[in-house]
Image (tube, rainbow, N blue to C red; front, top):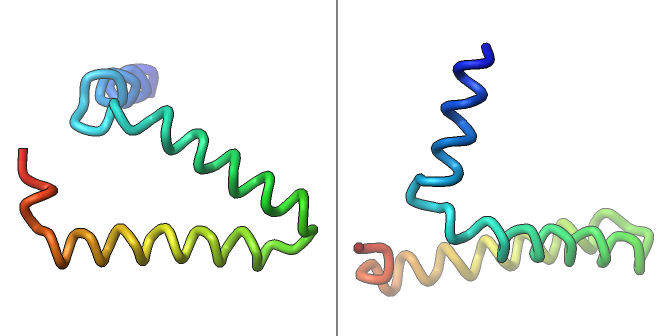
Length: 68
């Protein structure tokens, strides 16, 4: 199990998405802040949905953005 956890950490540090960790951490903090401010989980879920919708639209409309 320790070897698997080590491999997971190595993938996060050297994998293809390591440059997204900090922005996604801020996004998660924004979700938590939205929940704290409104007291409603639906508000944070709506923001999460809109973020995912925007990313999906960008992927479908501009597929070249995902190419290395």
